[in-house]
Image (cartoon, rainbow over all chains, first blue to last red; front, side, top):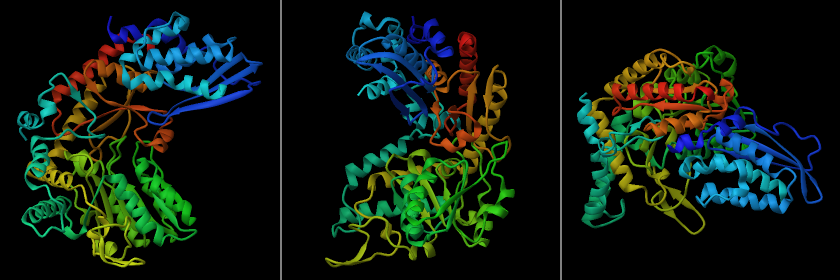
Length: 138
Length: 404
C-alpha cells in the first residue's frame, strides 16, 4: 500500500466528514486554542473536568482531513480518561507521528494516522488538536 | 525562447524530470550561472566591500557595484536608487520605519489593497500603531481586480501613503499601478509598490510606473535567498533618515552623534550580502538576455493553456481574473477536499504546489475560503508539465471521489 492509501482510509474520511464531539461545550471548565499560522488551520478544544477526570470534551475549528480526524479521534479516546492518562496518550501519539515510534495499541483508532510520520509536511496537522488539549489540561 | 535549453540551465529542473515544480511564486529555481556567480565570489573575490585598500577588496567592490548597475538597468532606475536589502519584506519594513515613522502623524491614512501579501500590511500596522495613523484598503471586485471606482472616496487629503502590490501572489492579478500612482500623486501621497511577484515575471520600469519605492526579492527571480532590492526615487531617499545604523552607512561618527552617507549606502548598514547581491545581478542579466517580454509571454501561454485544460477537471474551481492583466498564478480548490490534503495528493504524483493562505489572510477572508491550493509558473515550465498537472488532478478526482 502506498503512504497515501495507508493514511487516507475510510476511518479518516468518516471522522473528517462527520467529526465526533464537534461544537461548543457549554459547561467547559478549560479551553485552549491551537493555530497553524502557515496554513490557517485552527482548532479550539474544550474540556469539562470532574476532579481529575475528563468528563466531557468537544472541539471546533476548521482544518484538513488529517487535523480534523486527529481531533475527532482524540476526543473519543480521551473522554472519560484521567488527565494523566490523556497526557500519556498525547505523548504516545506524538511519538508515533513526530518520531515515527512504534505504534502503541492504546492509541486505538488513532493508529490510522501512523502514516503521517512519513509525511513531514503534515505532522503539524496531526498534532494541532493535541497541543491544544495539553494546553487545556495544564 | 528555447525551452529545452532553458531547462538545461537549471540543475534542479534538469536533474529531476519526475518533478513538476509549480511553486515559483514562493521561490524560483536557480540557473547554473547564478550558482557559479556565488561560488566564484567565494573562490576568487572574497573580501569585504567599500573599505579595503587592497586589490582583492577593490575587485569585490567592483563586482558588488556592477550588480547594483544591473539591478538599476533591470528596473529602469539609476544606480544610486538601488538599495540592497534581504528581501521584499525587509524593503517594505525599511520604507515603513525610515519613511513612515518619521513622516506619519496621528490621523494620517495609509491606503493599501485587500490583496496585499502580509509583508505589505504588517509593517504598516506596526508603524501606524505607533503614530496613530489609520489603514484603509482599496476593495476587490468579484473578478479579483481592484475596484478603482472606490479611489475617489478613499484618496482623501489625509492619505499620505499608497502601498500596493503590483501582482497578487494569490490571484495573479496585475494591478494598474501606473494609474493608481498617478491618482496618488495628485492626492499628494507617497507610492510604495510591492514588486515581489511582478519583478520576476513582467517587464518593470519603475519610472513609468511612477513608484516612489519598489521592493523585490532576489530569490523569486532566479537569484539566491538573502538578497533583494529596494528601489527608492533619489529625491525621496535623500530626504530620509537611515533604517538600520552601523558600519558602511555613515559619514562621520562621534560617541554621541553621527552623520550619514548619501543613498544608497545610507541604507546599507553593516556588511551587505555581497555574494548574494552579485549572484542576483547575474540572475537579472540572465532574465534581461532572455527578455522580460518573453518571460511574461511564456507565463501567459502556460496560464491560458492551464485554465483551458483545468476546465476538464470536474469539481475544480479556479479563482482570479481572466485577461492580459493576469500573471501565471492559479489558486484552486477541488470539491470539498481541503487544499492541504489536495497538495499532499499532488505531491505523491510529483507535482509541487503550495496550499494555505499564501500570506494573504485578508484576501482569503474576502474569497470566503480558509485556504487554497496554488500552482504558479515560470520560464522553465512546459505545456507538457501542465498536462501532467491536469492528469494528476483527474486521477485524484477519480480516486478520492468520496472525499469531495
